[in-house]
Image (cartoon, rainbow, N blue to C red; front, side, top):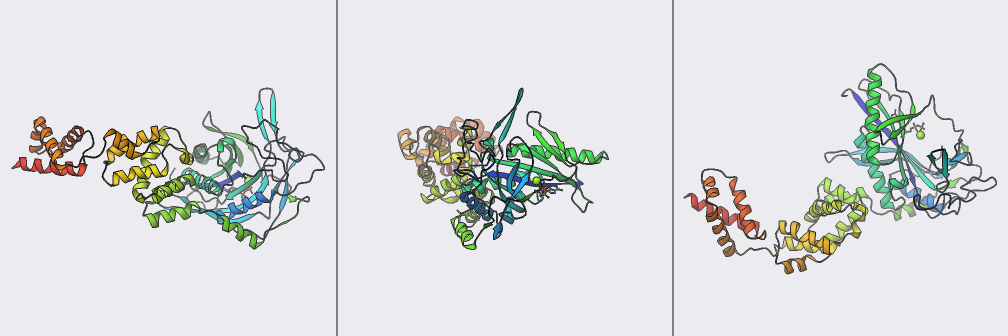
Length: 485
Ligand code: ADP
Ligand code: MG
């Protein structure tokens, strides 16, 4: 596969989390919970004689997303009709934007592995309305118009991604940014964020891009990555056997883990776009743009830089902590409670995430876990002050905090978990363990240095895990040294 390079461009559809639809006051409802067609007014149903009105909140969300994606916001944007027939589109056209989109020429920084970042250019982002949703059942098809007319932002990248991992990384970053802005929940299982991958491969001797295919119906980032990998292999195989790749719309069959061809297209779809006559041109004043820019929260890249520079965190830790706004907030709250940033980052990304994973709690729900930021900082303080050692903190206190929601201090006091740093007591214990394990001592004296760890383990066991490891090690080494003489 060496001589073949992968080329990927993504088209992302993000529903804007507004109260009402893009062009009417009809409410936007949850796609899973609401009864089908319970939120479908005359406009959603495409009744003749209805007139659309632009939802300005949706436009603001779109502009904010454009700004967060480092786009330029042109002073004018305009809606256009995209004409095609499909049962989920009762008007026979979708109101979209064509040659005057809301946002252009942006970029997103993605993590390209090994601590590096790569810029993925965003060609454009435009506003449109979502279509209804078809489900195919035995004996026919059903259509739900609740989704018809929901504000949708389509974000189109340049073909800048060169692997399935980069595409997944870009998708995660976009999702993260939209969630930070609060304009989209990122809940892919509900279809509020949808990805289409355009894929082609290039031979190393090529000077131009080759024909691409477009994979639709990707309902998770993981499936998208798998579908891209499959498609890349399929295209390389075709070229190797002397065939060509025909432009096509493909689907991902999740159950079969394979690509299915939905339709071949010989040339670009002809949608007969024309300016939407029922809507005015939208003028976007610079004052409006700046007012919206001022409303943007600190975004993941900015926080990541801050965590690296101010807190000295590694690129990886900073990236993990900033991917979800709720995690960043939790981390900052722990630090504000006095915890040392590096150790807070370390404990959070290892111990706390492990507990969350085993309890199947998503990172974004960290705000609701049984251990709040100040309790977590309390545990770290006990460990730092040496009241308990690291392993007691990890194995004996943290799990109980999770189970009971109690403070670390109370658990340590009640269970007598405080660290033993009394050199006299530790010395006696070391002596007892050494005399009870003469065989180990002999092996040590015969040159086996590794046996020290086993002896150390016995001593810690005798101290019920509570010994101050540094003191235990120091006394143990001294005693062993003196035995050599
Ligand atoms: P259209 O307007 O027909 O949908 P575009 O040229 O606007 O086509 O591209 C749509 C998407 O496909 C963009 O995300 C773009 O980056 C991507 N793309 C275009 N050409 C290729 C290619 N040869 N390989 C992979 N992706 C491509
Ligand atoms: Mg397209």
